[in-house]
Amino acid sequence: FKKVEIKNLTKIFISGKNKVKAVDNLDLTIEPGEFVCLLGPSGCGKTTMLRMLAGFEVPTTGNIFIGNKDVANLTPDKRDTAMVFQNYALFPHMNVFDNIAYGLKVQKRPKAEINERVEKILKLMKMDDFATRVPSQMSGGQQQRVSLARALIMNSGVLLFDEPLSNLDAKLRLHMRDEIRKLQKEVGITSIYVTHDQAEAMSLSDKVVIMKDGKIMQVGSPIEIYQRPNSEFVAKFIGRANILKAKLIPEDGNSATINIFGHEYPSKEDLNGKSKEVDIVVRPETIKFDKKTHEGTVLKSVFMGENHEYEIEVNGQIIEAVLSNPHGKDIKSVGERIGFTFDHEALHIIDNN
Ligand code: ADP
Ligand code: MG
Image 1 (cartoon, rainbow, N blue to C red):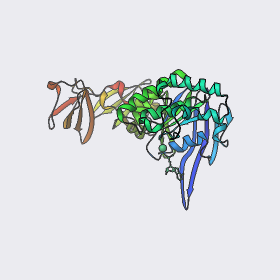
Image 2 (cartoon, rainbow, N blue to C red):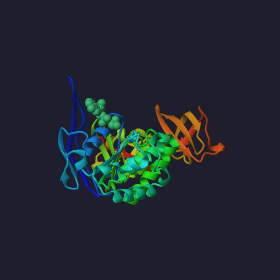
Image 3 (cartoon, rainbow, N blue to C red):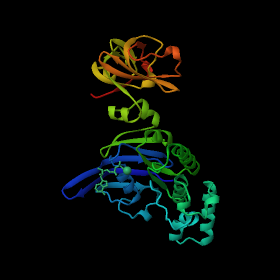
Image 4 (cartoon, protein in one colour):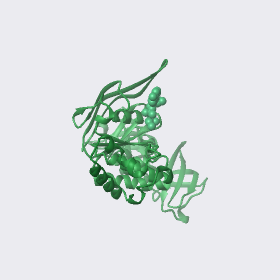
């Protein structure tokens, strides 16, 4: 399976007097066999990026290497990529078997080979029983599996997905997510998956690429992105986050303390030994309620079953906090005072310089 390298990739769309920089000078390396999600809000350039990889869109400038070959100006069939689309893009008049076989027929493969490969993929996807159905006789989830099978059968070096699950209902989406991940692990194919759904990106990826306005904001494993976001944008795009103003005070050696609401917490990061104002990311679920280091007033108190959500006002700032496994006696109502403390291990500094 193939490595993908993107260098200085830019796409500018010009329509009339308007110029849109959909992808802005991107660099990205994807290792063979890796599952990478491009994640970002609508309009940030994800689809454009994927279409340039597939060959449906010509880059304005830059290079795309797929397994050491620069494919930026090759047609889609010469790139060794296969794509799974949001709207399935199946041929409505063809049955499942013929839809899946289509690409191999175009390649003029021998009939026996085509039959064998389609049978094999139908089995892999547990769709043997659907071979003679046409798309209109199937649910959205089944159609998307056919579209996935149709991409997989080409034995390409790279599989591209553009929001393949966004037309499915929530429950089926979860199921298909697991199925895609399992299949990808089994087959081992390099995969690039576009989504605006952060839970999808977190659960599928080896590596998440966070995009905004055509640019990459951060690249990292789901844990890195969640626990050590490099900006307020990333922190808030991936999950919920409190961004607190704090003062970082260096100590002797390589350590420092962070002063939040007048209390000093030890810090692992000393940011070059300079005392400065910093932004601290605090995830709501890392706040603890067993010690009263700080006190605030409950503005919102919502029981959600597996957890309880609060908004707490402290010194004019509003803090989101989540209590997991809530019991009646621990729960505070709106207007009550509540004590809490931050977990210093979970405090993350954003270095704004
Ligand atoms: P995403 O998939 O992240 O929602 P897109 O890649 O579809 O974003 O779009 C990125 C930007 O490029 C948007 O501002 C969009 O309007 C613009 N854009 C996309 N395709 C075209 C096109 N064919 N012509 C003009 N502008 C386009
Ligand atoms: Mg899109």
